[in-house]
Length: 203
Image 1 (cartoon, one colour):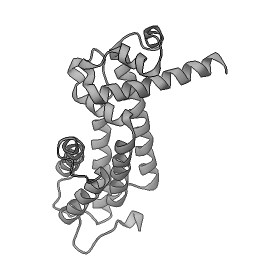
Image 2 (cartoon, rainbow, N blue to C red; image 1 turned 90 degrees about the horizontal axis):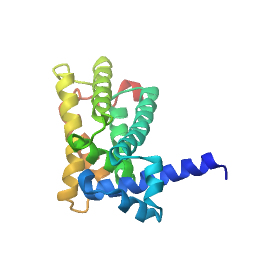
Image 3 (spheres, one colour; image 1 turned 180 degrees about the vertical axis):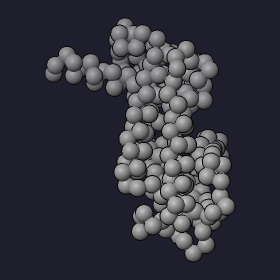
Image 4 (cartoon, rainbow, N blue to C red; image 1 turned 45 degrees about the vertical axis):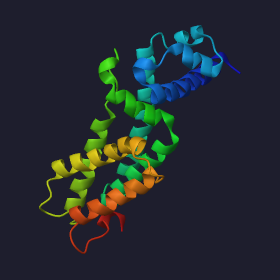
């Protein structure tokens, strides 16, 4: 194996191990030696790739943000609508269940004041694509005319993030995907024009 490939594999392994530590312990309580111990590496290996814990946290967050940006692009390519927004948020929920990088990123974003590096701001992109989807639904006649798109987008995103946070403390055995589907069942009642259950763009 070429040295560049080895370095790339080591870097990815460090990001995955770090995401588990950040998710479980938070930024302040995570130490680089725990990450190196998890992988059976020396601390020097960690420092070679990430000289500071803050840079490692930034890299974890950036890796997830790149994945998230790809999902947004996928939804835009398919055509934004209420249906596509629901699909996008269910995909997010599925990734949240299986992807420690995502769960760690959300925790790191909430703890950004402790981190001496500027982290990506994934919620900005989430809010923007939600607004775009609601506006597209208004133009197709699916969204109620009296809905404030900006206010509705903020509330939808707040509900999604709130579900992710509450599931950690109020887990009753239901999956986050189930909860997001329930959330959308409620939002469709309040957002959609009566008699319009599917978007023109996705029909």
